[in-house]
Length: 473
Image (cartoon, rainbow, N blue to C red; front, side, top):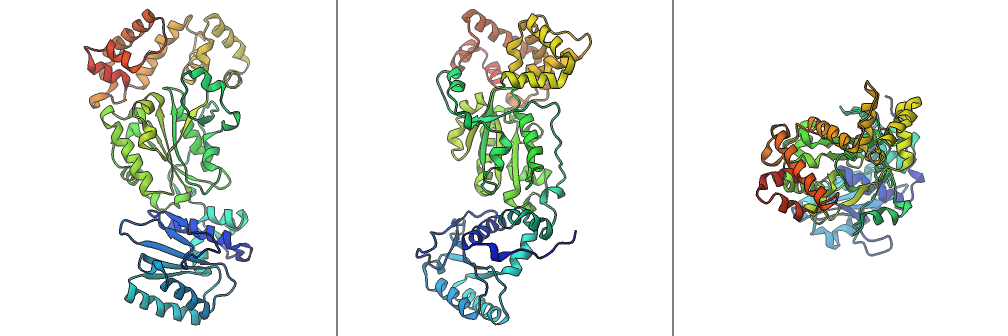
């Protein structure tokens, strides 16, 4: 593709130029935390942008100059401001970011000054002038699109980074449209949905794409078989196909050895470090697939990666039971917690009609005859009831017990690969698991309840701690 130099720097205000340099620095130095240093008009010690302290104890400092010309006299003044102030002794690198070309005399002075500053103070002097920035911005489709305009990005930049990735996501089929909402605890779970602020309901892809350059940290919680995996896959497809696309990387933990996340990415996405950090979306699915004894280790791997890659958006899904048991919000306090929003009547009817068309009414009559309506609001049961209906002889189980028995068998079959406590496969303990579930179900029936606390579960399996650990997993 033929690219052009057509960036209109004159349309950028100082604030916009400084923001552009900030985000460019964040993409260029992926392991550093950059922030704007004070505000224009304050005593900034000759610095506009500053990195959070690196492991070596030094800073990367950037001075931004939104100017139409930058002669030798201004170069001298900028360097003098830096040399005479506090950050000379605290910095490893001083960068001059300039929105115009640097002319020949100024270049010679900069080269001379760079040698002197390195020799005397062990500080590296770099220059990001217009020509340098324009060349580097060819790889920054998102930044050019946002700070200039989409047409400039199409003309100036190479193809967006996502098009060079191995993984191209397809829309999930069939897919039930799902929303999410911020998670909060209430004593009565029913009140939780009655009192919710309707303005807080959103899609996962819109939460991520709003404020495009803002890094997100998200933990998505939901009960088992509520559709977390399908939501992550669908969101990856949507984020890869918006006007300013992301590059989603999906890690499914059921296929992984538990190890540092960077190692997983190296194995499966060898080029991930070449994607601009602000374009990268890391989606981690299947925390419930992690062996019990490795669960806490996986949380620490997520925390370590989040800290060492501050500009990569990271989203992981987790069962609500595990979220509460492991106190994930305390281990990962920087993560925003979201929860799957329940399906509504309109969602269910739209999905049924979209799947069954003119046979939808017949399906609904069978559901009503078996008093199975409540099952329709659970994605696992909804999709599997429709699958059962679409299979000859086009009937449904005649009772709730029949539905549960049928789908326990299906859940076992589909989840037989899963690793449980001790690293054993679920398929190797199929009979023991069925007996354990029957024992728990009988206890619930005697108590006249449909839920149980962890303490009560421990009492049921007092003499069988192995099964207690496995069934909670």
